[in-house]
Every structure is written in structure tokens, then in C-alpha cells.
Amino acid sequence: MTEVRIRPRQVLILIIVFIVLLLMVHRNGKRTCDGPDYLQAMYTQQQSDTLPKIYAITPTYARPAQKAELTRLSHIFMLVPNLHWIIVEDSNSTTPLVRNLLLRAGLENRFTQLNIKTPQEFKLQGKDPNWIKPRGVEQRNLALTWLRANVNVDRHAIVFFMDDDNSYAVELFAEMSKIKPGRVGVWPVGLVGGLMVERPLLDQENRVVGFNAAWRPERPFPIDMAAFAISMDLFIKYPQAVFSYEVQRGYQESEILRYLTTRDQLQPLANNCRDVLVWHTRTEKTKLTAEEELIRKRKRSDEGIEV
Amino acid sequence: MTEVRIRPRQVLILIIVFIVLLLMVHRNGKRTCDGPDYLQAMYTQQQSDTLPKIYAITPTYARPAQKAELTRLSHIFMLVPNLHWIIVEDSNSTTPLVRNLLLRAGLENRFTQLNIKTPQEFKLQGKDPNWIKPRGVEQRNLALTWLRANVNVDRHAIVFFMDDDNSYAVELFAEMSKIKPGRVGVWPVGLVGGLMVERPLLDQENRVVGFNAAWRPERPFPIDMAAFAISMDLFIKYPQAVFSYEVQRGYQESEILRYLTTRDQLQPLANNCRDVLVWHTRTEKTKLTAEEELIRKRKRSDEGIEV
Image 1: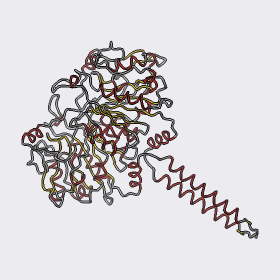
Image 2: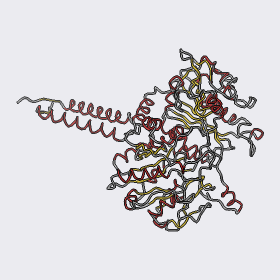
Image 3: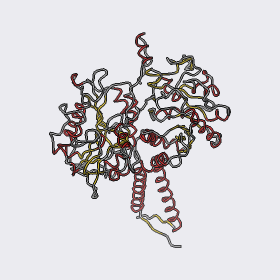
Image 4: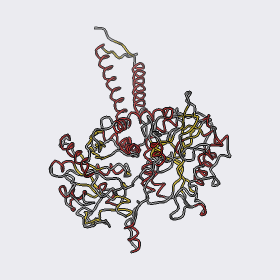
């Protein structure tokens, strides 16, 4: 049998060559994927499956600023890997505007596009202030139906109602990921109800014992739709939990929560409700006076252009 | 001299072990950095230094929705690696609110925090509509002074004026990266000037020959501040290019551009000005009636909380 003969110096050289190769490959692997640490950390965590999937339900309707607002919101989804977007259009069919926006954001496998038209009698008329009739009831209920039918409840998941004009910090979704099975998480919301911040009040053991709401504080849960998220298993346990047209203004949150939790069972998040990670911003109605003049002349500025 | 003797089979085993090690290291390098393809692509490109740095100048001032709006805007910076944020506060000193927000967004090495107070005679008073007096003049000029003093002009760079309440698509910054040295890039802006879209008009050779603005179309450059970005070398070549208080409403854009370019030298971007990648959205003024009542009672909802 033949043998290869190598001198010790050659062995050393071979080892050095291999180490250099290893380092080069390692470096190269890293190079393709630099970026902010928090992103890296989230993606790594997501891959190791320690983060529950968060289903964000967004009712939306056609208006001049729709694409602008959904584009802005899509950045959150680009940054938070465990978010799944259930977007429900108030229309007779899903639109290419919304679909293309979701695809352009790289969310191929992370969205569900639904549609359901609000019945005419509940639609806002011309100058109605937008709180006269309940908004998004049909759309949120359709999303809940979809979730109950399609989500594997053996895996912990979270449901959040994410309006398309609020402002969200990325950290809010890290907080939501801490919600325990069977619980509803709560946190403060900025710039809502006429206050700088509406928030749950905690006792010394960090249990929710009240709320600081100034507007209709007598509501069972005097909080905004952006102030809470729900463990998915509760929607399975309580199939009757849905939104309703039959409730007073400002009672939608209380309506859904009364099925799912009691005050003392709420799970306070965001540094024991001391950090503000979501704000109830509202976008001004678009002024289109020049456009209306064009339209009278049978012209338009966005001929062939999607705005 | 001693020699190491190895059989061919042993050599084969050694090679296999090394290949497996290489693959493991390679895989491990990759694993830490998964994520959306477009993010990976941008970070890779950025590292290979093919993208020019884009300096985004944002004047900002204290108001209830300031943190909400800057938080939302910071997502763009998290997603676009070649963006550097020059944020100029209208205040007597820089604030921890802005600084902490920038640090929390992971932008340690990618921001410059400046401050300069607008002189009292130019400040908006109570109910003045916000277009009566020019906004952001001092702040934008301070940013330009900083850029002229601090940027290495041997490397191609871009300057963009990025207001804190508009909505931006990530793709806008990929378009801006295409601006050539010595040029000003232009593109459409949605929801501005009373129109669905204000945009440059091109001839058959894709040169800018006009604009579709309905409001003051006689302006030299009847476009919004969000409609253009400028190759940094032009600010060095034309040191007199600054913003001014001495111009009529709506003429700030024309004022700065008249030093730097002519209409026919504008570089059309965004699919020859057919794609809308930025929208002039505006956030509603925050209603704080309940908060004002609290303050009369010497209380507040955000005691010890930054909103």
C-alpha cells in the first residue's frame, strides 16, 4: 500500500491554509447580511421559532391617502419578521393597489388580502363626522372568521387590531410577543381621547386596577383599539366574541374584550405601562380643490398614474 | 528529519472533514442574517460602496405628535442603509427626546443632531395658518452649513429635504441613489398643491420641459420640497445657494434650485416621473381638550412619561 509522506512544516502550512479559508468563508457569510443589530436579533429569534406569530388586522378603504398610509405602515412589516398582515378592504373585491403594495414590500408569504363591503346603511355620508357610525366592524369580523378557520391553534399566536393611520414603534411588537396564552396584553396609547396619553393604572403588584381615560371612563374597558392585543387561543375558546353594530360610540373595544377577559386578567406590557409605543395620529383629509377643477374640465393629474 | 505518514483513505477523510467544517461555518454565517431579500440586497450593495450616501435634512419642532412622527420616519432609516439623517431642532438646545429616538432606532453612526431656534419675528403665532411665514429656513440652512463643512466631496453624495410628516416609499431612496454628479433629480409627489399628483412633464427624449402644477405654475420650479434631491457637489460649487426669508410663499424650492440647476438639466427619476413614491400627507393637529382640563387642575396624563 502506498503512503503519502508529509513533513511537519507542510502540515503546518496546510493547517494555516485551511484556517484562512474558514475565516474567509465565515466573513463572506457575514458580509451578505450586515445591518442593524436589532433586525439581526429579531430575524435570528424568529428563525429559532421563539417568537409567536402576530396577526395584525387592518381594515382599509379607498381614499386619496390610502396608498401613502399603507406604504408607511408596510415598513413595520418589513422590520418585524413575526408579523402577518390581514388586510381587509371595504370594497366589493380586493384591489390591485393593495395587492401590489403588499408584494412590493416583500410580504409574499406574510399577508392575507380579504374584502367585504360595509352595508350601505352603516356607511358614512358626505359630511358625517367619522365617529357617528361604527367603522371597520364588518372588516374586523371577517378577519376574525378567517383566523378561526385558518390558524393552527396548537401554536401560540397573537391578534392585534392595527388601524392604518396610527403611528407604531417597532418595539411595540416585541412587547406584544410577550403576551401569554389565554391573556390580553395592554399598554398606553399616545394622543388619544383628548389626552397626551391614555393608559392602564397598575397597583403595586403591577396588576391593572383602572384606567386614566377622561372620555367615557365608565366604559368596561375605556381604552383605544390600539391599546391591546389578544392571545389567539381566546378567540377559539370564545367563538361568540365579535364586533357589533349594536353598541354605542366608543364601546367596540369593550364589546370584544368583555367576551375574552376581565380587568384583573389583563397583562400589562411596555415597561409596566410607562412606555408609549403607539400613537393615535390621524392624517388630514386631502385637499383636492385644483383636482376637482380639472375633473370639471374632464382632465385629471393622475391620468395613468397610481397615487 | 521525521515524516508524517498518511494513507490515501486518511487524506480523503481529512478533506471531507474540512469541507463539512467549511459548510457549517458558511451556514452559520448566513443564519445570523436572514431577512427580506431587498434588505439583504441593499446592505450588500451598501457594503460594496456602490451606493452614494444620501443626507436627509429634517427640520423638526416640539409638538404633541413630534415623537410619533419621527418614530414613523425612523423606519425608513432602519430600512435604507445609505441614508444619513441630519435632524435640526427648532430649539435652543438639542433634546434628549430626539437623541434617544435616534439611538433606539440603531442609527448611532448615521445621524447628526443639530439645533437652531427660529427668530421670534418669523415664528408662527397661535392661529396663523402654517404657510404665512416660511418654515424651516434657519434649520435647513444650518444643515447645509454643516454639510459644506463636513462632507468629503471627493465621494459622490446626495442631499434631500425630508419633512417629518410626509409619507415615503423605500423605493424613493433607491431612485435618489441614481442621481448623477452635478445634477438635481426630480420625481412626482402625491397629494400636494390641491392635486392628486404634481409632476414634471417630459418630452419624447425624457427631458423635463414643464410641470403640471395648478398652484402658482409661474414659479421657476413649481414643485414641492419633497420632489427633488441634489448632488452634493453642487452645494460646494455654488456656496451662495441657501434658503431665504425674503421670498414669497411657495418660492423656497425655486429659491434654492435657481442657484443649482436649470429646468433642462433636471434628471427625471421614478420611471420617467410616472411612479409616485412620496406623498405630501399631513398629520391632524392633536386635540387635547381633556388634557387642558387636567392642566387647569394642575394634573397631567403624561406625568413622568415621554409621549
